[in-house]
Image (cartoon, rainbow, N blue to C red; front, side, top):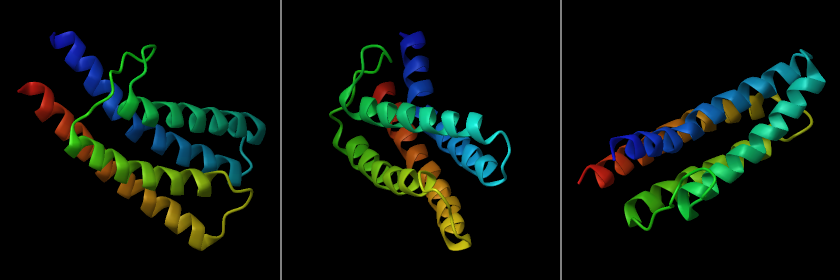
Length: 128
């Protein structure tokens, strides 16, 4: 049982890692560093993040996530999802202005805060 819980906590915490990875890839693209490789990596990160965000809510057998029906967790996931959609929109743009970069960084921080709440609620829900 402890192994299952630790896997769940790892999966629930992954979006925080993905969002940082995605912003880094976007920065490298804008700096013309391994542009083709980083564009491919960014696109894959977006796909992985979309799948993971859906799996946290609805479940995904391959990712070994069962989803949740916990109202508090779903509310926080909804907040995270809205922030994620904004981050994805910005990260997918061909060119970002300074103002858009500032917004991307702010949304990244907000996403991490929101997703940390999801992790805390998931732990509390599964520790009872």
